[in-house]
Image 1 (cartoon, rainbow, N blue to C red):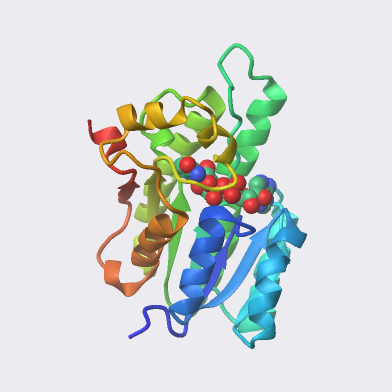
Image 2: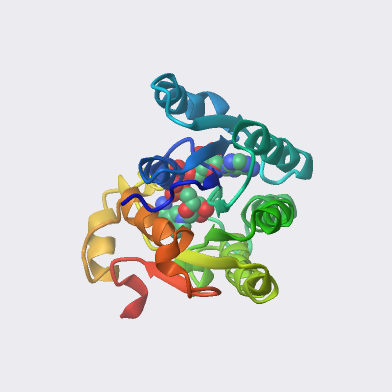
Length: 250
Ligand SMILES: NC(=O)c1ccc[n+]([C@@H]2O[C@H](COP(=O)([O-])OP(=O)(O)OC[C@H]3O[C@@H](n4cnc5c(N)ncnc54)[C@H](O)[C@@H]3O)[C@@H](O)[C@H]2O)c1
């Protein structure tokens, strides 16, 4: 039995990596999907192939940091599929090599705008549609960087902020039948991490850091998003699902 039949899902940052894997899995599970990204051509490259086959998926150009861009995405969902039941706030940026000393105010504000303000803006708009639909689920893709330090100030603070934004929304929205949860991936092989993974020292670092001694696959994060978006997690809200091969448990 498919797990998302009758649901309309918005998945941000879906041009590749975790967002694409999540959008594809949700589609397989019967959802109608609005896939969004700043990189429209890359996104539409794979979405248009599936849409041509008659599958219910639409690509939408989106800058999650801008309110008006969210309005356009929600309008696309309503025009195409008539409702919004699920929001996966996945779009994010990681400024590699950032330290307290070398992070400029502009970089700090940009990371916050995409990683934290974006999910806030999206939730504000989508929740209105979820209330109208009688309930919904929001899945925020945070990071283990939102739980432990060492990943640069802006990224850590933005992902830690998203972790607590999740809990605050969970409390406020529970009476409306809307569940809000966060996922905290460890290292996952995606366009975001390709450069880091190809460093000569990467294998050794990973073996020392990760009990499972391997990097994660985007599909392994998507599986968590499916659980939190579907009725399989009907009594779960405000929780943190860590998917990291054991990295922060040691
Ligand atoms: N890959 C990892 O190891 C890892 C670990 C922990 C958390 N995460 C988080 O997972 C999420 C997905 O990352 P990924 O690893 O798949 O990387 P990715 O770079 O493949 O995906 C992120 C996507 O977000 C899009 N994006 C960036 N800014 C945007 C904006 N303003 N508006 C709309 N789209 C925007 C990018 O174009 C990109 O397609 C991110 O939030 C990331 O922080 C990733």
